[in-house]
Image (cartoon, rainbow, N blue to C red; front, side, top):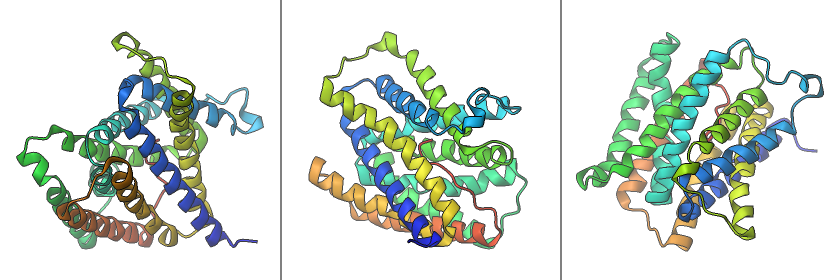
Length: 293
């Protein structure tokens, strides 16, 4: 029988693996229109969440008194999701994952203005270190006018507001409803892309595209379960295994070799995130924040 901390460790590991596989499939799917990939992410994520609705909420699962905040959470999440999908298709996998670790930096800044939180010396230091890391990673892209480096930063901005919105919503709303509404929003938004062209996938591609939604759904659930069972300080460092997976997949599938600047920048961003997480734990404000949901 596993202890609670061991269960939390296992759930976090499975969550990181599921997110990494989802990123891998999204990068592979560049022959399909982006809107079509969004549909598979939303629809099959939606199916997954319908399966975990509590029985006593089956008749009124949609009920909420905070529709406006749900809308803002879905809008910011959709912007973040589209941005990370574009980045994954056009940049090395390790580069995208490295920059995505910077989301807590922007969350810290947003919390000052949206939650009126006071940020002390250590978190400001973490913000500065994190920004230096982002500059180190993206400098070659900006000097070469590679616009795609902007998209993972937009992802971080969108996800940062998602973190704030979830922090506010989770005081009254169940996590499954927050995630279900977002999957519904993705599915609905994807329909507006049909006039721009969709491609009929064969059976193998249909299965792979469906796995984007399934892995996205279970990854967020496992992430929440990890924080539920274990101490955040024990399981959060496991999230950075995603960079190891990204380097591995990128090298063996796409012959991508991360540059020294990418690795140095990733190290600075990770150190920055760890400082922020440690301070959040100390101040007892840490919440479970889905990445793609």
